[in-house]
Amino acid sequence: MIGKNEHKSIALDYGCWAGDFSVFVAKYFSKVKVTDLSDNVLNIAKKNNNKGNVEYLKLNYEPIFDSK
Figure 1 (cartoon, one colour):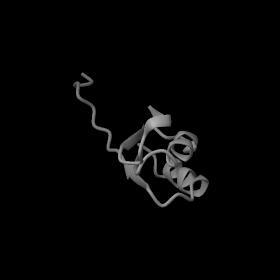
Figure 2 (tube, helix red, strand yellow):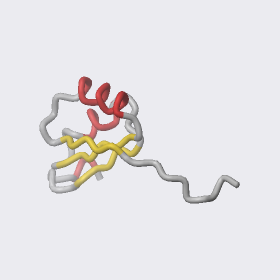
Figure 3 (tube, helix red, strand yellow):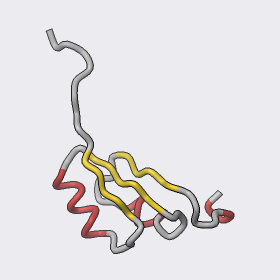
């Protein structure tokens, strides 16, 4: 798929850590959405990526089960 992509697709980097995946796919996709739970991790990913087609989004964590 990457070899045939015409830069019209969106990629999702879910739980990006240092952003290595987003750096790689940013050259093959028109937009990359990078997500993580941590502001610190997102800041690291931003420093490692200079592509203009990357958007960084902080995820919110909310437990879905009662801990009792």
